Structure formats: structure tokens, C-alpha cells
Image (cartoon, helix red, strand yellow):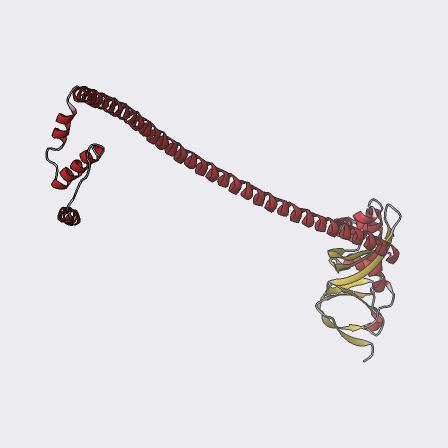
Length: 340
């Protein structure tokens, strides 16, 4: 259409229209007609852009690490960026005339790499692997305060570190060391658990021994109490035996006195009888035998009198010539003897 063209940009694009070197129109999300032979269009994306990066640097102990992260930025001042970098559209109104739009993310990554190098050169490998938060804070502050960034009208919205990795060989070495450390800790935990188990077992044994000692002490106390009770019983028995023995001794003493008294009485009675007998014998000795025989025959039975008569006859047998005893007399004597 004789050089006239229509352009419509998104709200995230800022467009500047120059005619014969003078700025005639600018804004985000514009749509207008322009005369291509005399117009230059500059389109600057003002939306946020995420730029991933991978940076390889060396720590203070000369160990290579790889820093993987992402940078988020946006164009805050499109005029500044358009003055310093070529964002002019081609004659077709779609593509850029230069490669500056593709170089902007690389500029930011390069500056981030410079800041990363300055931060990592003061850290050892172990410090670098565990200092992602400190590195993020240092990079963000460095990018926000960098004059080369602010002069382009760029605003850094955010920066994150996804990973900080050593080389595979170093990683395996660290893994081996960490694994050994973990194994040592596991061994220490096992030893500690065993020691705790031994301590617990020792405490249990001590409690069992203390319990056995307490039981034995109780048994000893019981045995002592039983022995004391037996001793008291034996003491009581001994006292009873002594009392019985004392009673028996006293009884025997009384018996002894009784026997002595009975003996004395018997002796005195015998003496009295002997004295009476001797007096009687003396009196009888002085008496005529015939009187004694007469006295002896007093109260005798007829048989006894006959026997005495026969005895006298026997004593005088030398003087008697012949003695006749009738059968009737013998029969009568025999009958009386049978009846008695």
C-alpha cells in the first residue's frame, strides 16, 4: 500500500516510533499505521525474562565447581536500553536488524559470572557447596547495584541458585568421605547403643544383686529371730528344769529327813522291843519251867494238849516201860485233825 504499514504490539512490548530521527510516538501495546520509508520502529520487550545459566568457577582451594541458577529481569527504562543497544525492527516490522536483543541476556550472565568468581575465590570447596544462600544474596545485591545494569535500564527481579556441584571426581571423593563419616557415626551409634545396653544390663544385674542381698538380709534377720525365739524357749525350758530339779531336791531333802526320822523311830521302837524282850526273858529265866509250860498250855486246843502230852512222854521214854494207845484215841485224834 505505497509504503504504509500497520503494526500492533503486545502489552509486554514497548515501541518507539522515529520519523526523520525524531521520536513521534512511544508506549506499550500500541497499534498504528506508519509510513515505512521514513519511519524507524524500536520494539523493546518490557516483560520479565528468565535466563538460566551455568557457570564454572574455581574456589580458593583450587577446586572447580559448577553453579547452576536462574536470573529474572525486566526492562524498566526502554528509552535507556534503546539508546545503548539496537532494538530496531527490520523493514518487515517483525525481526530485529541486529543481534543486540540476543546479547542482552549474555551480558547479564557475564556480569553474574564476574560476581560469582569474586565470591567463590574467598571460599573453600566445602564452604562453597553449603553457601548457596550467601551466594544468592551477594549476586543479587551486586547485579542490582551494578552501574552497567542500571545504565541499560534493567531491573533485576530475582536470582536463584539451583545447584552448586563439584567435578564428578571431587564429588565421588566427597561422597566417599561423607559416607565414611556417616559409617563412623553409624558405628558410634551402634557402639553407643551397645554401651547403653551393657549399662542397662549392668544396672539390671546390680538391681538383682541388691534384691538378692536384701532377701538374704531378711532371711538372716528371720533366722536370727528364730534363733532368738529358740534361745528364749530353751531358756524357759532350762528355768523349768531347774525349778523341777530344785523341787525334786527339796522333795528328796524332805524324804531324807522323813527316812532319817522313820529310821530313828524304828530304832527306838526296836530298842524298846529289845528292852521288853530282854526283861521278859530275864523274868522267864527266873521262872520255873513247869509254870511256863502251864502258862503256855493255857488256851491250847485239845489236839495241841495231846501233842504236848505225847512230847512229855517222849522225853520220859526211858522211864516208861510200856505205853498202850487205843485205836479209838488215835482215830478220834485223826478225825479232829481232818476236820481242822
